[in-house]
Length: 367
Image (cartoon, rainbow, N blue to C red; front, side, top):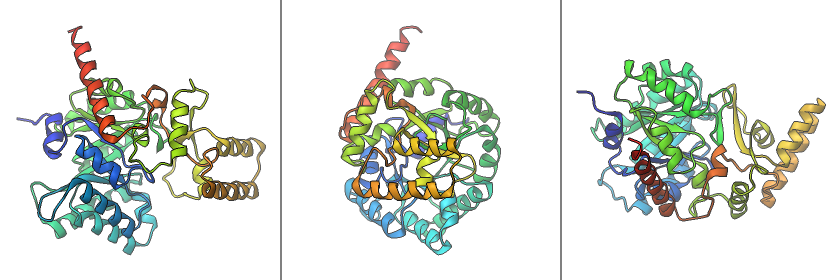
């Protein structure tokens, strides 16, 4: 008998009590935030895309401390998110050392994303091989999460990467994503209808624009294979996130601005920061600000590299000052529907879970 996907997700991640995932957000979801999401009944991922081996070790040490993990206790109930294109860009010795740190810490899951077919397959294979060498073949082993942003990626991902969990990200997501992704509900509906022919028990997890328990229910109810939702922007407002107080205040302001401080998909921030190398078609969604405005003006006026260098210099100075009028504040389209307050992680997770429970009961009245 085929195991239902929702049951499989919770069996693979025994510490989860709620279908709530904190996505791996670089420079935001560190060890403290991700471990407290897991401790609260969800599953938290450390945003490890730009971390050095030493930086990764530090964040995972924080996870151990927060979760009270001791050697021989089992799995460290957090995940780590890694960027395949970035692993392929840095020196191979450094990339391998990052993987060794992650696997030696016995994390519960690794989330791989953003690479071409060759890169994705290569790093999936290496993660599994290193897990086998370092920790052995364990029934309670490492879980591999793979993220896709369009239907065209489904075939090779299932055949060649063989994920334990498939994350589907829609165009609404904050931070980086495929600029051609459909809206989350459309993409999830299409993929979930195709999935039974491939892997009927594979859990799907939706990401993009989720803001509360009601929006979570809106995807969970689409298909039995959809097993959880990823929250990003909502957790940026956690007390434990590493976003600055100024960035958190801006997110609160944006949530109450009735569209005046909206989100925009753009390459402006990556060009200004020099964080290039993302796969073709990937850009980022963040709050509109002066950097985006000036970049749009450059494109409209047909100005070239010299003006772009000026933007980079000004951006670097803004980073030193913590000027949120220029530096990036990533945010998804759900920003205007959030209960935008700075709160402890435990309160946020419980609030989403309570909202989900209430929405299920209300929906049951129509049954």
